[in-house]
Image (cartoon, rainbow, N blue to C red; front, side, top):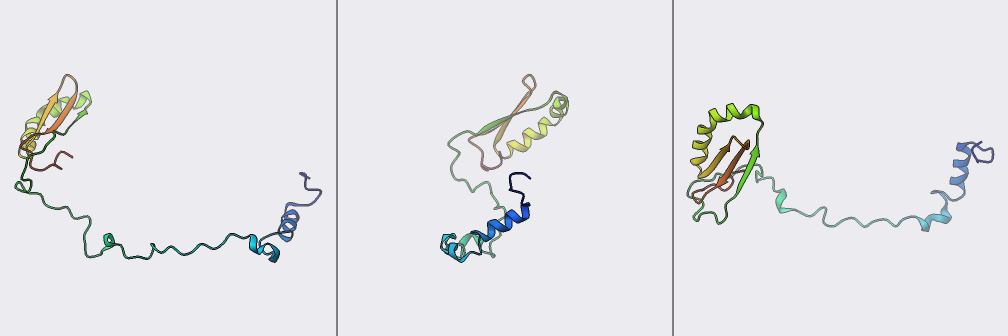
Length: 129
């Protein structure tokens, strides 16, 4: 036997539960105290209103932003060499589509990167995302 004094695992388990297990009335006060129910769980939450469509995107028009952006935002993405020919062909369309929103873009074929940045004429601050 594995140090159990000749008893099986089942016999050792039964002996352990009868010597001070969960059903023993003497150890009843040693049990963990019950937790009080949480008060905040059942409160009404204003963001769980079923009448509001949280996934609806708000429309953004050209006159919705009265002042220009204070800071320029930009990001650059590296592209693989095999995409260079494709990007060179479509870059005029990309430039004109972004220019309509007041966003500038630059294609650097030597470095293999595309850079997009806002300008003072940008009227939709989220278009760069």
